[in-house]
Length: 197
Image (cartoon, rainbow, N blue to C red; front, side, top):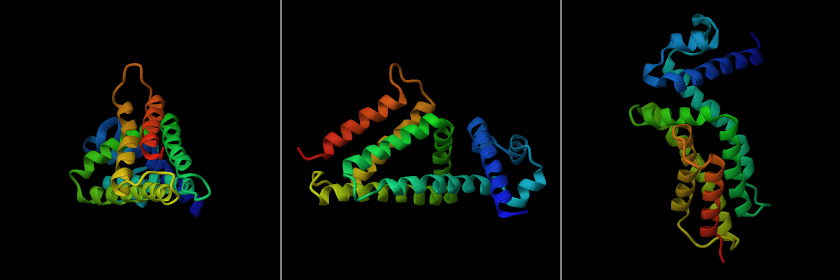
């Protein structure tokens, strides 16, 4: 089987795993659920993955790979730091509106990180890279005089946590507030706190 077909099969398995984890949660999902959702044989799935856990850890890798190229492109020294942060917020609202299921699954992975060292290590790496990306933008804004002098790590962490707040919209309906309005308001608050007057 050629590499393109193998990648297609893996994507099919990961899409099935995403649907299952959102519907049943990690603990209540089984390989048989992923088999049924993928419409592939159990043998075909075991050819690529040895366990349910391996599939879900691979799903995190899959997301990181898909999002990293775009996120790294946002960091662009030819644009102002403010514009880069606006692009970052915009990127996440577009992703949320396109596929909120991914954000709902992330809540399940957060829960797993509290109970399983492998998930914890995986998410630690993912979030460290994300915070570093935001830190790069903040530092650039401070270096060019656009942003106030702030603690870069705390500022980056605050921005990350506020972006992650979009996940609550997958669980709760907030009266008179959409995820887009939330992101726009939060980005305005953050930028007004960063930009030198």
